[in-house]
Length: 212
Image (tube, rainbow, N blue to C red; front, side, top):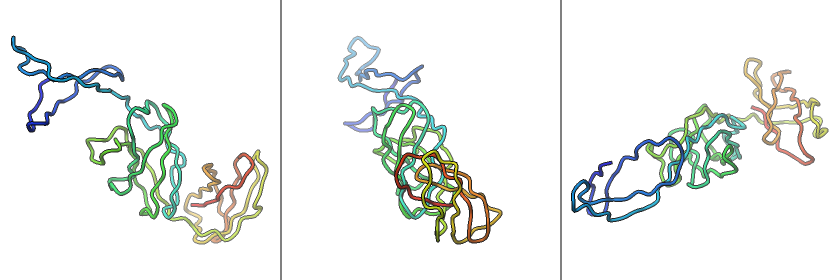
């Protein structure tokens, strides 16, 4: 491909498409296509996968507190440093941690603006749109309700039992999501100050409970 001259120390090249992720060598040639052609440098360059996001768990978090979310998808690589960007604001960017080719984790920002937003993956060294490496998926920062009580406050590791949660600002029209650590379950409206939550299975230990 032809290179565009930017300065005495910088050129710009448009990478051609390839059929799969791979590591290649990129060389710069002076006077290409002539008898005096000269290769002046070679560097490795890696084509990475699509970084396809299928879904996020949980898909919504408390806007006031930072939380760990799990991103599930395909073609995630540990060869480059990734970050998660929530919405279009560079200040809502956080590092993405590689778990496997199908899983990443990210930490959500604290005191985010409540409401629906989006999540995308970027190269960590930039926040502009040229650095986007994935599709965009829906995410939401919710203004959590204040919990007043939880009864019972313990349950079997197999899950399945029902807990009553007292809290403020409950409306019958809104969908109720209960969260036990990273596990979500549907809640049911009881009154303007209480809901019920079905407890999901979990290993022995304490977990934070949220309702949104």
